[in-house]
Length: 61
Ligand SMILES: [Zn+2]
Picture 1: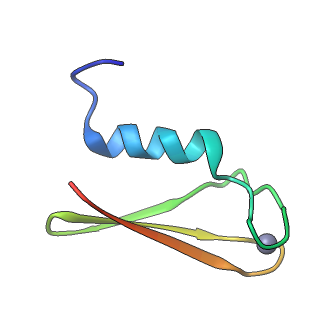
Picture 2 (picture 1 turned 135 degrees about the vertical axis):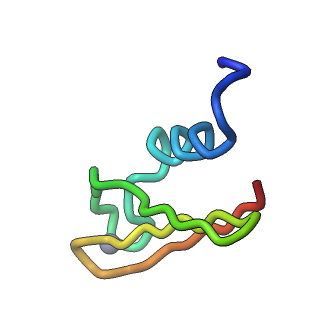
């Protein structure tokens, strides 16, 4: 893993690898996580296009 990779990119890659599948209905949504930032926090939001379940993760940079 490159030391020059930002924490942002690292987290995104982690989600892309393992959490593209809806935990409610099992639908795999390749559009992945939407990311928004506010100050030191990053919010990741995953909306299932099959059942509309929403998952969010918040992480501090
Ligand atoms: Zn779903």
